[in-house]
Image (cartoon, rainbow, N blue to C red; front, side, top):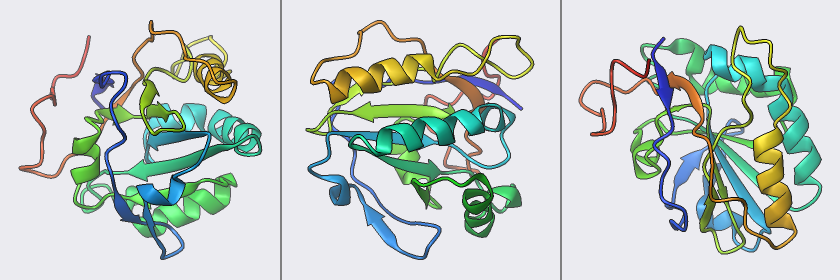
Amino acid sequence: MVRTASTMLPLGTQAPPFSLPDTDSNTVQLSDFSGSKALLVIFMCNHCPYVKHVAEQLKSLTDDYMTRGLVVAAISSNDADKYPDDSLEAMATEKADRGYQFTYLYDESQQVAQAYAAACTPDFYLFDSDQRLVYRGQLDSSRPKSDTPVTGKDLRAAIDAVLEGQSPADQQTPSIGCNIKWKEGNEPQYFNPQGIA
């Protein structure tokens, strides 16, 4: 497990397009979410201990806000050949077991992760109604094996601001998690195999 931080893509970045299969054998595109009040893109996976640590809060948060106009697309970009727990079939099982209501997509080519400069799981990208990036920070300050409770405080505050027509605070703390499991030859320039201290 390599501890990795978000690359903190510049605020104002237009959401990169994607067209990916979901766990129900549909193809989902970024354009499907046009007209929404806010869009949350989460890079995550099944096996990562950082994702498991926040999984209940991910369900709670997304259930809360999807009724208020937030749309959510979670994307797994891990190499499923080396990490079969992150295969599309396993993703479907995970979604059902966790009761996730959001779309769960598989980025087999890893091109979407590269387009978003995604580095870790979980990595959060919140876009406004124009699909411009307004938040790319942590869920909250809790980490596995810490005493800090998982509340989703940071991301919830950002979503509240967007849904109220305001901008989240510019000072944002990077998300931290396991590195995305890149296929050999797909490692982006920002990938640091040593992770962070």
